[in-house]
Every structure is written in structure tokens, then in C-alpha cells.
Length: 584
View 1: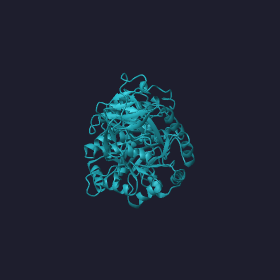
View 2: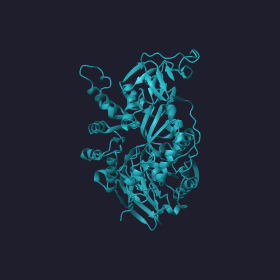
View 3: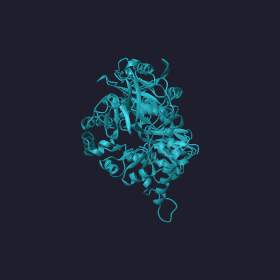
View 4: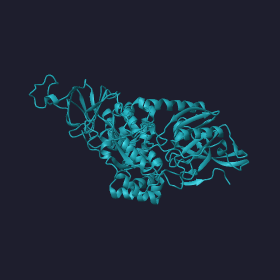
């Protein structure tokens, strides 16, 4: 194939090279420059060597941009199977992803990783994976997960497939710094095997932050600020920016770092010269299905450009830099020997994607056939039928001091507060700003069920429930009416998992996610519409939290500061211990 009439974006040297793009057997032969190439088919003489086999594509004067690489994402957060994910992602210019399947691994164990490998095989999007490091996210003493992995299990899983290229994010940062046995053993095995280790470091500072990365961890994608970016680059960490971290103040710092590395007396860095930005990459992490209407990783690049980052620097952070981070030497650039993965766009600022090529083949309106494994890992919810009495505090009467999870209304960070709550025959009399929150163990291992209190989520009516409940994904229910909470729980058990909103004994909206209670094989457009309906239902039930759905799915995340609820009870995240809801 020859793609002519294009301007090739060289993300290595930060230049634009006019000229054709030569492709053979899915690889780039040459890109740009003054090169002769055969005439279009039909004008070729029959005797021209190789002539009849040459396909000529007119690029229409567009820029040819290397395909974008999202090297830290969780497919499960989009609520769809890999084939539906590929249908949504590839047409937006993302041509490869490195996915951490720790959500499905925490439900199905090794079978979950095997499912993702099989369900993503031979799709027109390049899938790579990391092996989850935190199954469970913290410890079996704090929550019940579908598996419990140490270094032996992780080493065995790495041998399953060559597309497993890194150890997934080490979320239990406290365990790393405190030198706890399981985390220490897993990281020791990673150093022994030479695995790249992804990080998750939201709140450590100073010596503790340095100690975390000194354990052999290479990346961090958690919420960034200028001080944190500067410090982590100094520590040699690869800084991964989600869209929410692409802020004016962070881009201002990147521009400062870029300017600081300019050669003296020149107005721009030397082509291919070193830059502090070489360790800054863009990622999506948790990408909701509604986001696909705005693109995918292109959204990060567009936002960075709109805030002042030069387009070629922004594109480098979504192409060549992530490729180098992950050791994917044939991806991330349009150079001889690289895979011919690229897209055509008429504008490097708005990045509207007109045509996409993966391995030299054009991806049109992508529709991937069912591979036969889309629903092979269904696992039923082993939760017994519940009634309103299951959401009361047996034996409690009168006023008692209780520990309450307090949401801040903006994100998933929480605090602990103490409130006096009156009980009548075990049923709490809730103030308008209080709700009940419950977590039910889903595997049928022990049948545990915990119950606590939540403030700052809104003045709720009815109930909502989800089997997307990071990271062990037990069944979580938030509500003001115990009977509605029971109905919501039972509805999801019948559906095999998903999201549901209930009021007055009536199911208002249901998003079925039958694959492990996390995924659907419906098209992304269908899931996106249903999720939007669910988010609208949250507001109708009185939820005022700015990220109501995200909070619902994260109120169980025992690595997220500062207090959460698991199936085993109320978790003090900082102290890594269970604490009673009702004070003695």
C-alpha cells in the first residue's frame, strides 16, 4: 500500500514530513520524504514488478498520525465485552491498549484473565494486558474476593499469553510502604522476573512516596497536581495523566518543564532531544461508556492542546512515549519496521478522525462478529433472597453513637464522622441527609452482609444497587427504604448483575451486566443509553453527589481514602482495619 498526499507526523523528532507512506505486510517501509512510487492501479504496466499488487490510497492532504496507545485502562469500566470495546475504540484513533483486568480477576480469578485473553483474540484492536497484582485489592481480612493471589499464582498467569506484558497497578500502597508480606513477595518476584510494575499512589508524600517507587514500581496514574508531577518525574516515575488530571495548572507545569529543557539560545528543543515530558503519558484508566461519543484517548490529547501544550508534544504522550514505557517497539511511531497503525486527520488541533488503519488495513464502521466467548464466563450471584428486615440492626433500640461514611459530594474520597442515630426495634430513624449502605458477599463463600450509614450522597428516596463495586465487586446497595433495598438486591441477583434503581416497590431502571456482573455484550451505544437513564434515575431519587454512579461503585474500594464499607464491615483505609459502625 502507498498512502500519498499526506503529511506524516513524526512524533519521535516532533516534525511534520510531507510525502507518501509506504506499507507492506502491515509494516511501515518508509514514511515521508522525496520518494518515487508507482502510479495508481490502472496506470501500471502489466510488466511492472509487483505493480498489480500495489494499492494506492489518497490521503486528501490529511496528517497521518500514529495510532494512539492507551497503556493503562480497565475495559470493565466501560461495562462491555472486549469486542464491543474494540468497536467503540478503534474508529476514534486508538489502535492499541494495555488493559489491567483486575476487576474481573477479583470476581473470577484466573478464569477472568483467561476470559479477557480469549474474548480479545483476533480483534482489529491490538490488546495487551497486565497481570493484576492486587487480588484482593487489600487483604482477605478486610474483604471477600473471588481469588487470593500471591507471587506463585501471578507467575503462572504470566505464562498464559505473550500479550501479558506488565504487572498491574499495585493499589495497596500502604502494604508496600509498610512492608507487608504478600505485597513484598509479589514485588520481589517482579524484580526477579524483570516485570514492569504499574503503580497507584494517590496520597503518599515525601519519604513514603519515594519508598513506594523504590520497591520497583514504575508508573502512577492517580490524581495529579504540579508538585506531585514534578516530584515523580524527579524520582524517575512515568507520570500517566487521566483526563481529569489534564488541568490548566498541570499543563502549565509541563510547559515549564519543556521550556527548561530547551537548548540555550534556541526557541525549541533539538529534534529528538531529551525532555522531562518524555516520562509523561496520557491514559484513560476508568472510561465510562458515555465517553465514547467524544472519542477515547483523543479526548486527552485534544484537552491538552486546548490548554496550550504543543500538538506534537501532546501526540507524543499518546503514541511514542507510552510505547517506550511498555517496551512495544513496533508501536507508537510511523518509522520503518513499525506496525502501520495510524489515522488521518485534517487538523492537529481538533483531531477529528477521518480514516483509521491498523496493520495497514482500513477500519471502517467497525462491527465485530461474536467470537463465541462473549458470555462464556457468566457467574451467578450467590446472594440469598433478601427482605427489608435484612437491612436493620437487630436488637438495637434508642439513641446510639454511630460511625458514618461522609461523602464530599465531588469525588470518591470520604471521611469518618460520628452521629447520634435513634433506633426503633432495630430500624434506624434516618435524618434527611443520611442513607443506609450495605454490602453482600457475592460468592456464597460465607454469606456475609454488612450495614452502615452514609451522609453527603443526597436526600435519598428508594434505593440503588450495583454489582460493579470496586474491587471485589460484591453487591452494594444504598437507600433510605429497607424494602426497596431488598427489592434492588433481589433484582440484580435475578439479572445476573448490573445497576438498578428502585422507588416505592417499583423498578425504575435496570442496566443488566450478565458477564460476571460487570460486562454486557450489547453495543456500546445501547449500554451508554441505559447508563444515562440510570444516572438520571439517581437524580430523581435525590442523589446530589456530582459523580453519583462512580461513588456508588467506589464506596466499597478499600484502598481509597479514608473510610469505606466491605462485606466484612466498616474499613478504616489508613489504619487498614475494621471498625464497628455502632460505638460500644
